[in-house]
Length: 130
Image 1 (cartoon, rainbow, N blue to C red):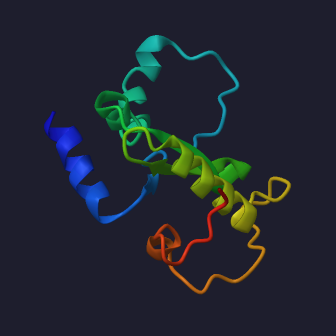
Image 2: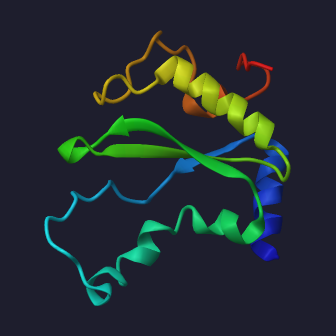
Image 3: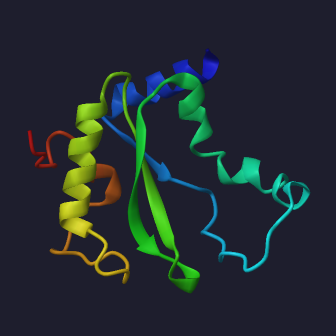
């Protein structure tokens, strides 16, 4: 309940919260089977940015925002108000249209931004499709 209230308070000031999808870059795929004993310690840390919205009920989605080592994707998580999925889809669409992934090469800006990531998602500056 406290976590939900905290996110709700943050969303009183902004329309969408933006976080990394995971707190670390993607790992290179293993070439051999991994036991549950080996994988279990890594699993919680990989989901620590996404699991809070599973508990609070806030809608969230991830869009690719770059490529790290070994050409593995980096994700940007968008978090919205309860029942705010339509805004999240519009923001994600706007992001992808402006900074879509280009043939696995990472973010390929279609235009140079005149604003920072914080202002991308404010009502006054973003042109969101309806």
